[in-house]
Amino acid sequence: MSTCKICNEEFDNQRKLSCHIRHSHKIKPRQYYDQYVKGPDDGKCVECGKSTAYQDVSKGYKLTCSFRCSAIKKRKELANDPVRRASFAEKVAENQARIWAAREETGEGAVIRAKIGLTVRSKNSTLCDDEIGRIAYRRRRMEETGIFVPDQTLSDWEAYKKNVRSATSAQYRKNKKIINPNNYSRREYELDHIVSVRDGFRYNIPVEIMASPVNLQMLETRLNKSKGTASWMTPSELFEKWQSTIKESLPPKTPKRTKL
Image (cartoon, rainbow, N blue to C red; front, side, top):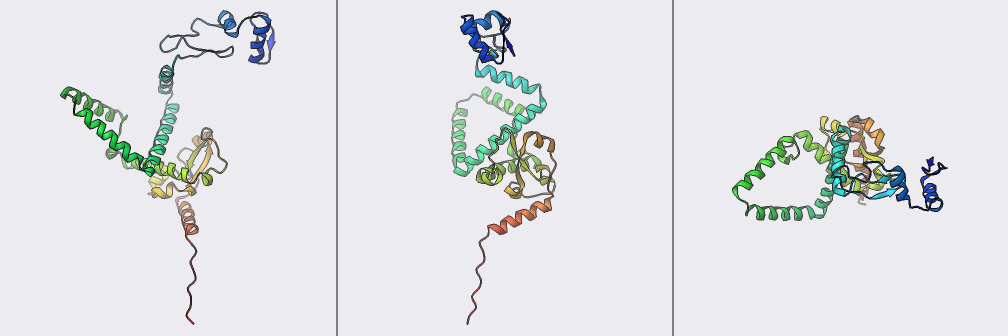
C-alpha cells in the first residue's frame, strides 16, 4: 500500500499514487517527492557526491550519477561479500573463455594477439628505462597477488580447469539444442558438469569427455550451488555413455558382398 503524504489517502500501487498527485494536488511526482519524501542524502551520488537522476515516486533518485560510479559501488559491494565476489569472478572467467573459444574457432584470436603484440612492441620501443622498470614491477605485483597468472605458471589443476571450461563453452554453443532443449535462461539456470571438474581432474578424465554433451546439464542456480563439487554420475558411467554416443555417431557398416 502507498499513502499520500498530503491527504493520507491510500492506494494499491505507486502508479495510482502518481496519478492522484498529478490530478488531485496539481503537482508533479518529482515535486511531491522532493517536498514530502526526499531525505538529506537523496539525489547525491554515494561515491562522488554529484547530483543523480530522478526515477519515480517509489524509487526516488538513483544512488550513483554515472556508470563509472556505479561500477565503483559494485566493486566495493563485491569486495565485502566473498561469496558474491567468487561467483562474479567465475562468471567473468566463463564469459572470457567462451568469447576466446569462439575467436579461436574463427581465427580472430590469432589476429587480435598479433595486433596486441605489434602495439605493445611499438609502445615499448619508445619507453625509457624508468617506465620499463615500473611496468615490470607492476607485472610482478600482479603475479604475486594472483591478479594475473601466466599460462606457463598455472598448476596442473588450474590448467585442466581452464581447458575444461573452454571446451565446455564450445560444446554448449555447438550442441545447445541437446544440452538446453527448453532454452532455460542462463541467469536462472547454470551449465553443470554431471561428473564435476574436480573429480575429472582426480580421475584423469580427458577434457573432451568432460566437456561432451553427455556430461552437461542445466541446473537451477540454487541447486547447482548446493551441489558444489559433487558428482551425480561415476566416471565409469560417464565413459560408457560417451562411448555409446561415439558408436551412434559412426556410419553404419555396409555388409561385405560374398563372391558367387
